[in-house]
Length: 120
Image 1 (spheres, helix red, strand yellow):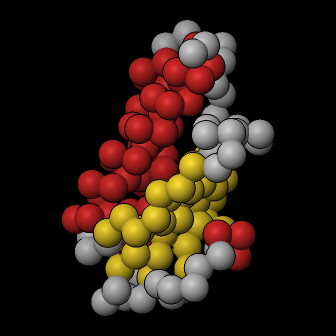
Image 2: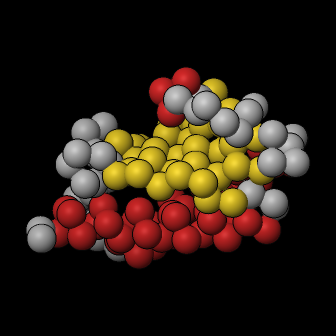
């Protein structure tokens, strides 16, 4: 496995762990985790049945970004039809301080989710 793939897997695991903790604390549960054909693209969905709300996070390997979205429902979800919250470009190569970069990156995503949960 090359360094780029290690960086991708590392950020995916870190984002999933941190975002999962935040969303579980707010009544959500992970209901979908799917990897696509290249095994590096990742779809995660967390739903809150009480609020009838779903948060979605997609890692797109081709575009190299995380796409944060939401649905005002919890069933019959088509990941392509989510309401976009934010796109987060991510550099998989050329970062000198990878851990610091990842931590700041995850903090941005968490901050946007907290903002969204506060408004809901």
